[in-house]
Image 1 (cartoon, rainbow, N blue to C red):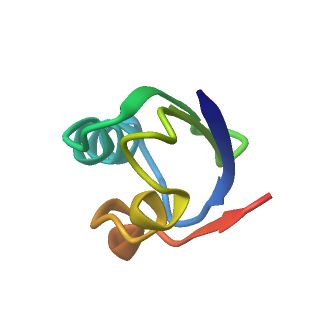
Image 2 (cartoon, rainbow, N blue to C red):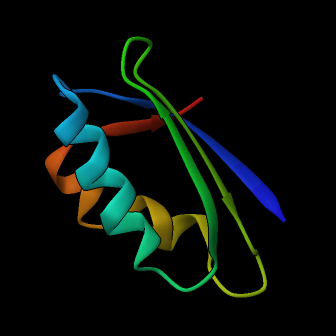
Length: 70
């Protein structure tokens, strides 16, 4: 299991958080998605044998809300 920590911009409410979680959860290999709305920080735990960091970062969620690896 690997962890990807992101600074996510553009979130304004819990629906934004839910949208990101739902889009990422559809991907095979995502184990857990934890997003802090106030801090704009997302931590994504994933199985590196099933999905790459690049595929996560290219997900539709991050077309809607820009994200930068931290």
